[in-house]
Image (tube, rainbow, N blue to C red; front, side):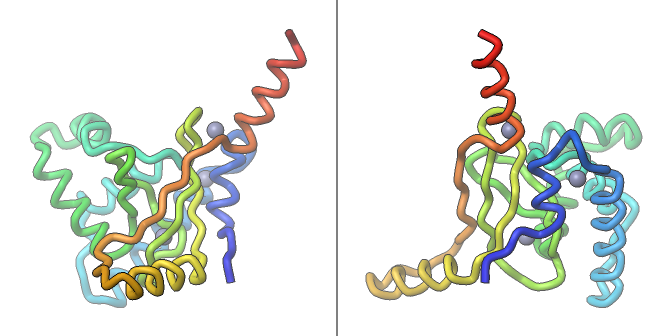
Length: 173
Ligand SMILES: [Zn+2]
Ligand SMILES: [Zn+2]
Ligand SMILES: [Zn+2]
């Protein structure tokens, strides 16, 4: 069944939710998952994850580096990429290829390829996990003998908040 996680729903109500709760939950999940898997969520990795979670809009590696350098003066692009590789491998973040950016996963415990609804106005991205989409991709690919490597689905459009704003704008005119 498809579902919208709480954080994904929150991502489309950007102004009116307590994002601190999203961040706190994401960090708690990350610590728990890494401890269970016996992998090290170092201070740096943890900080990069927190920066990715600074909003629900995907953020690029250079945006992360810029922020990281305020605390780690000697951080370089490889510093950020190595941390991102770790976070990607653990499923704590997803890469949004169309934006060349990264976004936190609100449900990192189980491996999955998400589907993302990405607002072209404010950049917010909401993640859906619909196994039917994955099955359809697997089936369609198998039928034509295609080997799937990357199956993240990226859908662009306008989020509810931006739609409401557009509506308000047109009424004002
Ligand atoms: Zn949030
Ligand atoms: Zn995810
Ligand atoms: Zn929007």
